[in-house]
Image 1: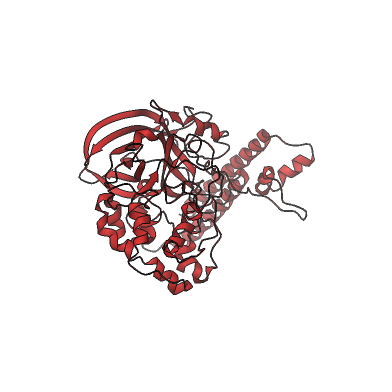
Image 2: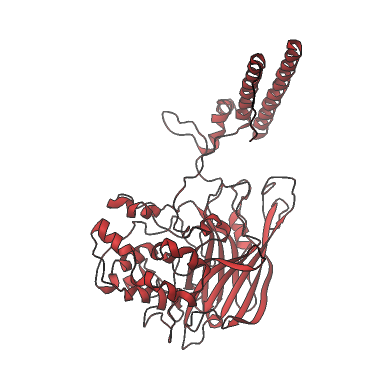
Length: 521
């Protein structure tokens, strides 16, 4: 902002102030007539997604969650879901949410337990725009992914890279120019969003299916855990603080036989990463995610950025964070829940090696990965506590969308696996939106037009959503309705006329002001 110094003559100040007030008042009246409403910003929250200092300032590159499970409707396939960009406010326009063009979004598969990836699925995105002379994301109702009114679009390529000891053995592009499902701007812009989303699901040769686009954030929990573990007295539990927020998701479904080592060794380790180019033009890993909550509450602050830049086969450097964790001591200090004796070898199996007899591969190298035994079939009635409740198809054997990983993790950290029985939890047991029965299984994103519209409450009841404009037109719509109704066209024309009148009045006042200034000179 430019700052001025020096004194302004008193008479000129008075005239400028009068004109400014009059013009501002008329402009405000004109805006109200046209129908501008106040916007309420979303509340800022601490996010479990924002797990490390550096990546918290780069949301396009920030892995928020990773899921891997045997597909419930296609049990010969495995589905991996990886999410980015935490806390997407649905109404966060005009620049809605896109994957970064200068990033490599990678899904790694370790199928022999050595802590290194043998398979890497790489997504790279390109952003396109049709009209650079408008600020709009869409310029009219969007009915298809190729609609001319969808101004900002993205496409992606998908590569399968085969590795041995981190050396590339082969590289195959298995998809090219696949469209991304757009952000759900709202019902006026995207009257049939499910159709757009379905068009972004693509079946590829070899039995692979892919999807990229916006989705409801599938992670459900009460994030007020960071306020002294739910207020220090469990007064802050029971509200899904991620409800109503979206993420950008990549979903990949592949034949299980294509990713596991063999039928005799069905355990795969999975993690996701983001790479971006540094100032020297070299690709650098800036985010990494395997099991949930590890970098949030297991690693201390000094190790968080280091963890994001490292690889699973280097995880011996973080072993002490697992065997001597901070959280049990906090639970004991605040809630008098006895902390199990250290070293915590039970957490080593949960976070680094997999559980023996469940999802631990032979000759395993301790590494932080989401480990899935692909030979365990999906259950028809998943239990939210997974393995803790006898459901071996759930977390920590992979992670399903419905697994309550916060309750599971709290109970395991408090010693559930070593005899310290407890029922700790955050009282949020399911997602705010139902998941789908078919790929990509994710709930549809919350639309930008969601929430109540402006309305006027009477003594008997609130107005219906369609009456929202009444509050902005001084009751003209309600009066018109009582006298036979007024069309939308008439209302728009009346609003435009009011705006034009306001502009004309502003012009007359400015002309008068300039003449007065000339006479005063």
